[in-house]
Length: 242
Image (cartoon, rainbow, N blue to C red; front, side):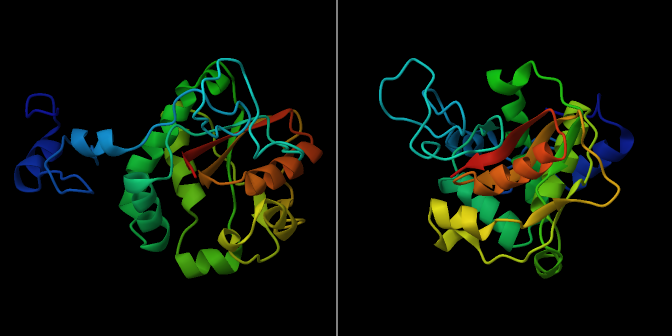
């Protein structure tokens, strides 16, 4: 916890007159913390066993590596997609308020959860050349006011010291994915993305970023475009897993 002894003068003065508070319960928290310990404990973590490809948890007693029904009988173009938390309860509420309630300050706790994915064994020892956010269509971004994946990717880039590049663009406006099943989501996204003009990704190891993984269709389509443009590998990380 920050004390006046180790704070800079501005932080010390701010902490006296404007004490930080938890974004969920308004309880007092340390400087630059956004969730209190009780609220952090309410965020449902993903624990083994889970799908090695998409992080879908499994409730049975499995000790070996496995692929879930979500990944069976279809091609997912990312090498793997990692999330540390389930989009349930408190996590889902924060994601929803961030995206649709325009509560931009919530990018900080979500980016902290995103940062935890980098300790996962599937990502921990890998070197990445570039972080790439999943893009929004221009019309959707104007409507929302920001691209949530970009805001999270910016914070993660600072955490892990990997450069951020806005390599992809969404060229086809698609209706919301929430009403579609797995196959319909993939069809809805076909040819929706492309590499931006004068951008290159050849021989790069890419970390693709989004807020939530549901079926993986959006991440897969982005990964397909990147790999067809010459990316060596495309791993994905999200703040939460539906």
